[in-house]
Length: 169
Image (cartoon, rainbow, N blue to C red; front, side):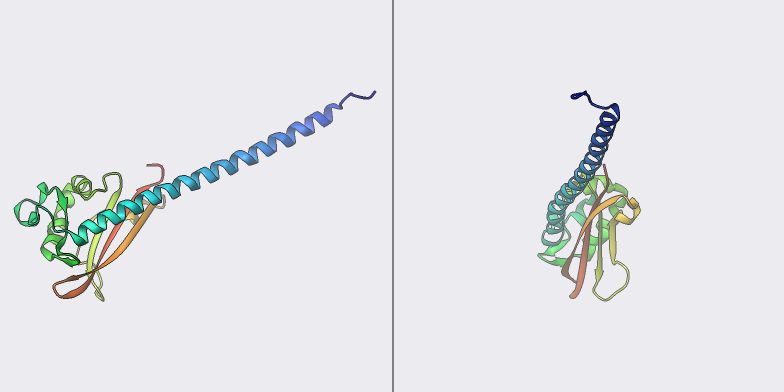
C-alpha cells in the first residue's frame, strides 16, 4: 500500500501549517503597529521642530499680535527677538486657551494636540502655559517634546513644547 497517506498525517500537517500561519500573522501585526507608531513619531518630530522654532525665533504675524488682536494673529510667535521671549506674548497665548483649536492650527500643529509652557530656570511651576499636556491624553498617547532655552526679562528660561496624539487617531 505505497502512496497512501494516513489521515492522521494530513491532520497533523494541516495543524502545524495553521499554527505557523497564526504565528506569522501575529508577528506581522506587531511589526506593522510598531512601524505605524514610529512613523507618527517622526511626523510629530518634524512638526515639533517647526512649531518650537516659530515660537522661540519669531515675534509672530503681526509682530504685535498680543496687543492688537490675539485671536486674529495668523502666526503665533513668542519672541521679542530671536531666543528672547516676551512675557506679554506668553500671557496672551495663555489667555487663548479658550480658542485652543484655532491657535494650534495657526501654530502649524493642526493634526496634533499641543502643550506649551514657559518657566524660569530653577523655579517651580510654569510662568505661563497653553494647551493640553499629553498626560491628559491617557496612557495611549504618543508624544514628542522639546525644551528650548531662551532669555526672558534678562533671566534664563525654558520653553517646553509638546505635541501628542492618541494612538490610532
